[in-house]
Length: 536
Image (cartoon, rainbow, N blue to C red; front, side, top):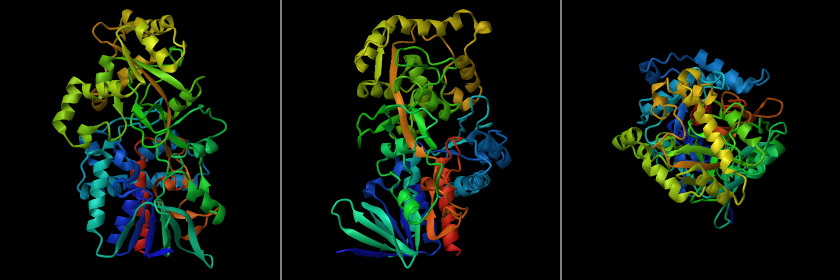
């Protein structure tokens, strides 16, 4: 027997984009059925485990820190770094929409919902040649993505009169329903018991994420002109498999654009407690670590340094002869710089413990380093470089790392310091000094020093590989978040928000992101859809 559910608006996907759409529709007087594939405790999707960083433009915090940001400056940075083509009409319009409205519709709106931001603005994705963020824009939600989700779920329930909100969990939507050529809902199946559902609504909003949870789809859409490693870790969720993207393209002639543009990370490790096959964690690579290939030789000639161009880092890692490489550092560097993306490994920010967070900044995050050494085989440590090389080889079951080569790699870097600051000529040192000019980054970046500095040990090597995260492309949408067909016309009754829409327009970020544009992109596209629906 098929169960029938009726509502004014059907929102498919319970991540941040879906939650905000449902919330604003409820506040506008519409009845909402919010359908999610996961169990109730996973409502919020990837945002629950996200760090909570947001690229915001022209905020009061930027003004307080004397950061001279404007929408015009941000738009120039966006187009240049993202390499948006002239024909990318809707992505360009969404980029403009983002930089003009991120302060009011994301920062101010979230503050009005009761959320706070940490009192520093970080400077990420500066670009290898200063072609990225020309000023700091990366704001961090105090409490991480988990607090963001909790806050918005409280608001969602508070906005729902009895019977106006229907939350449906563990439902997989495989197809939309049409009658006489008119969209009228969707078909779904319960993941646990196979019960079929007919979800009836005159409007459907897709908030289903992208394709990066399916390694099969990632490989199928990987651009042929870019190197692809033999193996990848999954940093998204298996449910983000592009199932409805493909159905809409095939059945409704909806346009999916920029499917090959992805926001992956270059330094992933297998999750020590995986929740699905291939589950990975994304490290925020230590800026001061030397990035080595599988033989223990430094990748160059331009050294790899995080924080400047993640897209380029991923490309360089993918070009290597083996699908993994190494981060070579010492305990001094690890204590100050080691970090892992997401809420799970940032408990003092997640749980809003300012004193403990301040102590970590002052004395080093000893607990995180020890946890990684205890839980993750990919972290190896030794008092000598020769001993470290032996442990690296034991991990890979090879003799690829020659102790003499590893020693020579460290010696060549350390020689810069033996010659004195006036004669240093290493691009990684130059980038470290540049990063330390901004106070927020100085707190998490070591003063350049020899790797073999006495008392800085033991030496640590971390085996890392490419990890998937977000889709930059998706269903093409207009500024009302309506899905467009291949002829550029809106498909009646069909909307897409968040990652499903490539965070607006089917690819608003272009080939690379200014970082932190994803959560705000979810919120902005959701606002646009709800505004169109409640004022129709």
